Length: 310
Image (cartoon, rainbow, N blue to C red):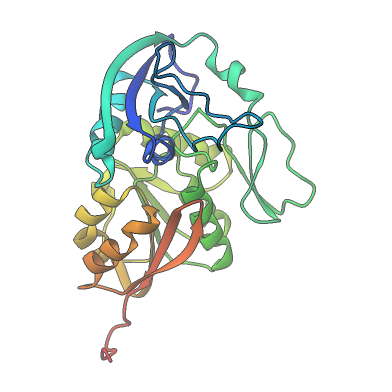
């Protein structure tokens, strides 16, 4: 997804999901850069249709429909297909099925959605503010980012947790690596909170372009490019992806963490924490550092050079 308005045609990914995974799928689609996600009863219009909300005198309603249809908008077919592929690779996705990937008219998506988004609080003084809003009076640190115009806009718990960690541990990091930068929101946050040099990398050229544009809009300096841009060790490595790629990337990400440096991982459900802890154990000890709405942020610190393990 790029930092400019969507083209005349978007692509819709349509999924069928069981009730026990529908909410997780919706959250994951947003984390996978969906422009928007809607959920509806897959049995609507049939004899199996059920009201989600209860009525007086009737049993308590279910938390979700037995089967949900999720419709996620993406800027192009490649983005929709990539999201579906990564989603289905998750260990909880056995109750998810792809129904279609189809082109849909974009209409004036930006204006239609602007009214739905307000400034997002990371902390009491740190806010993500769309360009059409004034920052809150209490905001001392502001990231200007428009929802729907770039990957990752701060509306998802995993992004907010990463930014909270950055704000809570602010220092003049000599180098920071944002791996899988998307919109560049974490890289921008690190720069705002003291990082002297930031490398933001992504396999998607459109994400790199979005990061460059968003950094300029926020008046911060960083380098953005493909994975080959990253080199050597960093005092802080950030990766807000999903569990499966984080496991595959474990040797690479761990190798980029400098002795005594910090690794911050997000995009993880609570039940995946033990698996990630085990995967990264050969390099560093991960612990859950934050939780929100079923998602967790994990943090580990690489042993300083010369330190003997206890």
